[in-house]
Length: 255
Image (cartoon, rainbow, N blue to C red; front, side, top):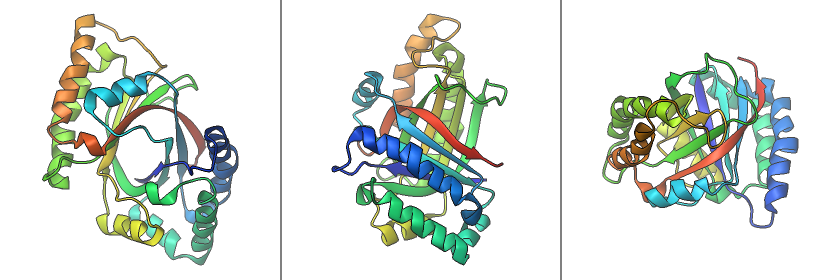
């Protein structure tokens, strides 16, 4: 499968509460209503959690402020996604969704890019987590001067196993890397809609709940943060990236 990631920024004239309410209760069902026309298989919204932990994640890395949230939409394949965009019914559906998005999203400050997921570990047994679960969403821009290929290789082959080594001690229960693909299509999105340049991918780390405690030696949990940040600096341009806690809202799953 492939996954479209949409990093949302709120319009300045839309109050924060109204933004989240409209996105979840109005736009979400609208997307679900168009799911067949656009051939989408799954749609999830991840809304920012208001917690001091966001500043902790940002400050230690020197990152950009959090985004209000991200949308993720899955397709069976890149070919299915392209076929939906070439079909008149799909074109009409995408146009309707784009018009609706413009009423609450600051499009020029937002980002859209296609990705492919790389699951690193999952201790949930594949079950869906409850509403109390928290997810660290890490929006990643590669280090200046580094190729996207080298960034993805370092992230997957080196950093992924390092995170896994601290997983249980830190209370993590699932970790997925989503690497950006289809550069030409992403550039077309940006040009057509006036979007900000796409990122190189996202990391998502799930916890059973905010503030979940790990198991094992507490010293391992204390070492995890500094060790992971130090390794991230090898391939992440911190001043162009973001990291913050979110809460997932699954709108539909037809996989």
